[in-house]
Length: 257
Image (tube, rainbow, N blue to C red):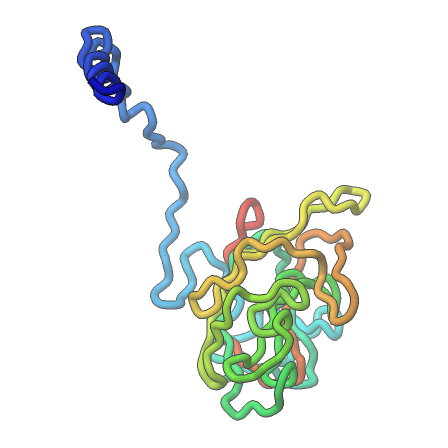
């Protein structure tokens, strides 16, 4: 008789021994958690906002936005046929509300007639937290369907920090989606960084940033770094191109409602 056979017989004898059969069996109810229940959220139809979202642009007006060029100045972009479009040269716009951690959805479109190349073709940006007129943490918006630029500056990059996992760009003239989860950085009272920011992002339904650690605020030249700030507006960039937006909504997470 082999060692393996002996081990098998021994295991069976143990399994069917009176002492083994008398052991109490676990009750599946012991591992069922019934409370507290998660709150009910009614999902939006198609790309519509879920029931607990704040609609930042629903196609009607810019009541949730202001210009960054002057404190309290109304946003100067164009609203027509349910679409918000950059008015080149008018400056960036940002939300009146301040946010910390959140989920955001927006749809954007580079005009089919867009000219130029590299960073000069359909350029805009989603700043997940605006810390100044031209500062914050940017996810790039750009025509990259057939337009080569530096990889950490293409569409869906965390600008000059994280290259997207894939290039999921649709052609210019087509609507595209960003769905982003932003975890804001935390700072001590003396300004020391307690925890960095993190970003998870999907571009046209494709995962392009997988809980990446942000190294600091986006900068065009030099290394990114952090400076202390609290809840901040969300900003859309006027980079001189007539990029359009629609269906912009945000779900504050944790205690930011």
